[in-house]
Length: 243
Image 1 (cartoon, rainbow, N blue to C red):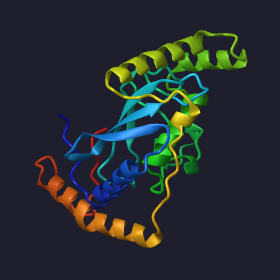
Image 2: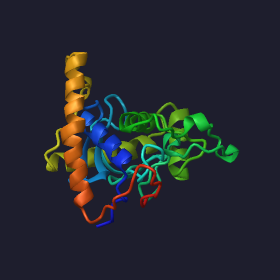
Image 3: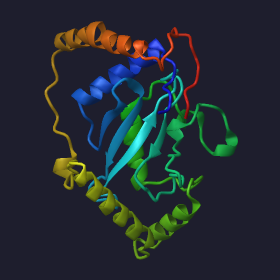
Image 4: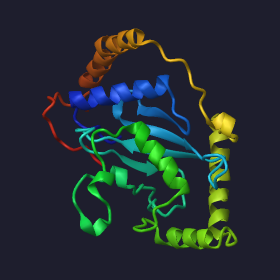
């Protein structure tokens, strides 16, 4: 098993808050879980193909790995499910601007504002990934063949079926695998969209968040600190985890 990044209390706090929030208030289009209960730095994500797109019915699994200095550095995402897409490398690594460090690189064609910044979070990342599935960036593709095929499909207004057939076949295979794992894949817009729930009042929210910081977070942090894979670093540690 790959060693987790050395513990950084601010990174642990950020990840604990985000993970708890996504469990309590799921976002339409994806679900998350920890790969190992004692490691907040590695998540498994199930991304559902949006209705009325080529990816409809698919459940695409991916692994998200967070660096030790998150959220100051971006996580990485690798698809575990086979995905034929202009912005996904053959090994499953995702190439998307939001996960690139915020450096000024004129050769990339990306503006610094399009890249990672610490205000981003898992919600914004995965919603951007879902959007990218249906609207690839073909200017600097990770998979050139998929990019050429996608443009041919797009420019022919769907008459050239090669790209479409590959995606639909992959979506069907991904759905079958998900159903074998007991995952119910949404097929309609109604099932895909999560119903809005009434949020608690500000005072109730404050109590819940305070309780989380005082109890849940401290307990999670203590458990992680006791794990031999983690060091006892302070907030100023900027060591990088493995990608």
